[in-house]
Length: 389
Image (cartoon, rainbow, N blue to C red; front, top):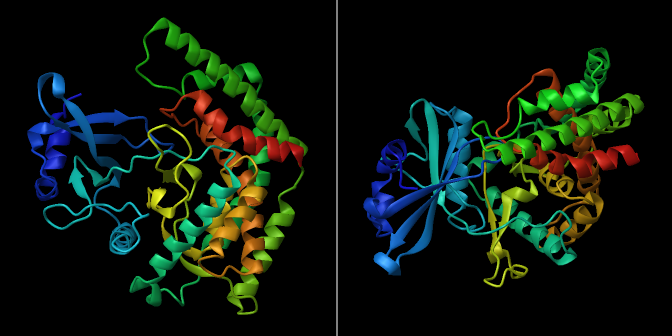
């Protein structure tokens, strides 16, 4: 579709970037892409070359809403760090500066950012060992690049908040378990509730509506499984609380110092894209094939947070973590104590992820512009692991 007036106003703030790439604003078109799990709108900005039957597209930019305006000081710092290190770490896809030099622009109370479009795909949920190995090298290179930023030194005395945060989240499990038990939810009630909370809001075609209802019913069954899993695992998360709390105290006391630095934090498999060949086969085994997107959660933390988040987003996290660590260690040391922490954090993240979705969908009744099938497919491997114990 042709760029709407709102998008034209936003892109007008990037006229110098557009001119630098020799693109006339009249030749720009926008395609609205499927949103991520945050629900933020994303547009693929393309330029049209040629006329009549010779028209062809060339991808150009990604335009995304990144939160409310004005940006918080922490968000401004994140943007600056990522932009600076992207100059010598091409795997990092960073925001482009506007004509005023800002890394985000304001429009109707929201902040928007423009980046170069990285034409790639996420790995499958069962990746090859070779790709896990390469991912480890890429993550290590990103961590090393972030460590070169001048602000890295000023944070060296900062106590990372990641472990305290995870302990706090796990400590809410018993309350959630009680709330779900008291709600006396049935599968049919959950399925009916999901029909009004998930899926595109503008679907009118009868076939699509029927499909959406079927997906909502399936999600209702899934959520009942998750509730039953919580009910049957009495305080199964308590050992994780004790282990993470002990590790945090040891680190803070200087008895077991862990690797810290700027961490991506939301390093899910869908945040690391891989270029693919024109044949659609596996992407080349080179870190040049990797693009890391969405830096909104970057902060000073334990580097194990990134390895755990990455591994937990696959069907077999322990296998992925093992191969990823092997690749990481080719570029940067990663002690066994940090590897052990990454494994523990991945286990904790399974409980936290399912708990978050139960809370959002059932207790808070949030609305998501995502298909029920997409939500269920992301959570299914995690629930399978929890049920297996």
